[in-house]
Length: 224
Image 1: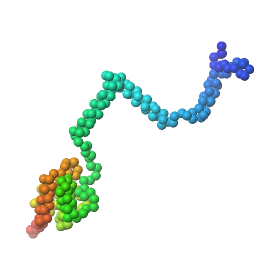
Image 2 (image 1 turned 135 degrees about the vertical axis):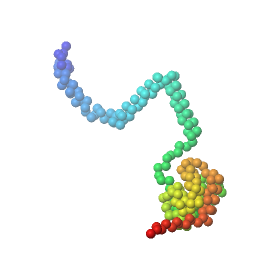
Image 3 (image 1 turned 90 degrees about the vertical axis):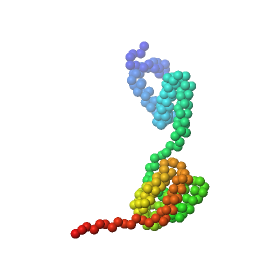
Image 4 (image 1 turned 60 degrees about the horizontal axis):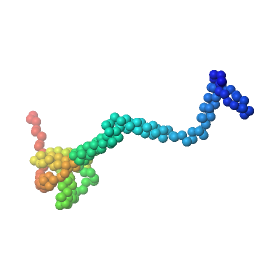
């Protein structure tokens, strides 16, 4: 029997040679560290993916073992969850994204009021009430700008335009705010336009074409 710490091997003549165990292990480690033995090893990314798939496989097997009916029960639960999500999607309708940009009245370079009126009438004839409302509101604002009752502002919102126009035309302030709210509901709130709403904006547009601004109030003179 070899002494502790020694590794027995045979030389070419068949005579046993005793090699200390520690140097033998170090020699084996040096041999195995040769790149030739590792050229087919998976790269770090592949090893990470293998580890991830192993963990997922363990997770699914654990879930299947804890679920009544095993894999069939787990698949049944997953199908029920998918059906529930589909029902909620159909019930609630399209998910509305919160706008991340300013709700400007004009999405592109503004045209003239007459051009927007023509576009609005064309949409109304086709029954596209949402688009008709949008163009009619833009025609209202541009017409006031053309009459110098509003300061041109391509980046303003419908609410801002209605508020500013309401100061120049106080008798129509409420109708202007209502028109701005209809525009926002159709453009950003996801509500469909209606013929009644479009008719309201059309009447307002016609009335504003003949409206006169409120006279400026002269400042009171202080008594000396």
